Structures are given as structure tokens and as C-alpha cells.
Length: 114
Length: 115
Image (tube, rainbow over all chains, first blue to last red; front, side, top):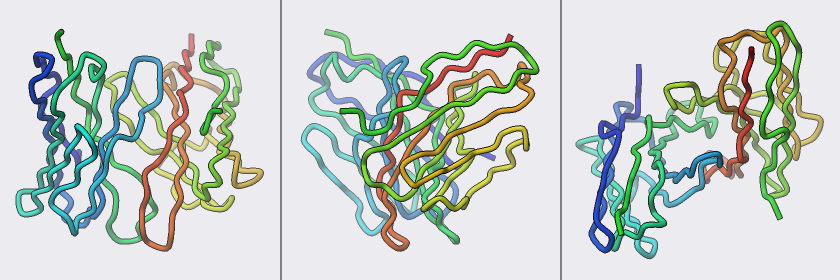
């Protein structure tokens, strides 16, 4: 039972364009959502997060949008750069007995072409 | 200055052996975790410790035993290793303020290969 899903295994965009990565979740008790970036042979690196009381959070080129009614969040990267090429994981936490554990999606591999 | 460091980065061992993976964080966080990334690339939590106390144990075989000597360290000991234990193991830490969550910081991972 996968509570967090990233239905696109891969995405390819041209440098300078927008990258949009999507994530869906099923547990309405989740109240905190995060995006991580992962390069090969490295650990996931925190990118940006959003609390369920907000619908948008922006940090430089990265913006996360949250649609609670649709149980959907997305990460926008504008403009995309070749260095953004990595695997992006969506994660969620919260619910009763919140322990801080993260439930991850299966990841989306982003390739930004020069 | 590494925030979350785990050793070793690579570990190749034979079935039946016992091995340990060490993790240390210098962020002053009070909560530490072990995650496993399997061959399908899913990242799943195994254990969590808050101030040296076990708070999450996700149906992991009891051959896996975490040990937290202090809140800056969380080691993972695995007994009687099996082929299916081959995976990448990530240590992580976070700061929890009451019921508020903050982001978790991850180590670089330990790729365990059981032959």
C-alpha cells in the first residue's frame, strides 16, 4: 500500500525551461511534505518543504504547490539547469502518533539537457 | 564538515556473517533514523530513535538491531546476513519540536552487498 506516489519515473526538459514534478498521496492525515534531490552514490538532500496549512512555498528557482483537496503536490523548477539532473523524491509525514518518519515516493529521474 | 556521516560506504560480506554500520550526526538533532533503499529504489523507514529511545520499529526482522549509545549516534547491527539484505542503508537525523516536523538530513548511504 503505497501512500505516496510519483507516477512519472522520468522527465526530460531543455535547459532554461520549466521542470514540473508531480506527487500524489492517499493519507489525508499527512501534514508536512518535502522534496529531496538525490545524486548517484549520495544521500538524499533536502530541497524544499511545505506545511499543509499553506498551498505554496517558494525558494529561489524551486516552488512547491500543494492541493489538499486533490491530495497532490508538485515541484516547479524554473529555469531548469543541467546541474538539476538527479532523482527527485517526494516525501510526506504526519498523522496520529506523529513520529517524524517520512513516507517516500518512488522517485522521478529528471534530466535537464543543455 | 559532514553533518550526518555513516561508515562504511561500501560493505561486501558473505551470507551468515554479522556486520555493523555506524552513523553519527553533528547537527545537535534529537531524532535519528535508519532507512533502507531496496533494489526497486523505494526508500523505507526501518527504525527511529528520539533521545536514545526507540520510537519506530517498522516490521523489520529481529536480525536487525539498532543501538543508540547517545543521541548523536545510531548504529545498525545485522546478524546472520541474507542475500535479501542487500540494499543501500541510509542514516538520517532531524530536530523535532513538539509535534512539529522538520526536514531530515541524510548520510551518504552504505551499500551492503551480501554474496
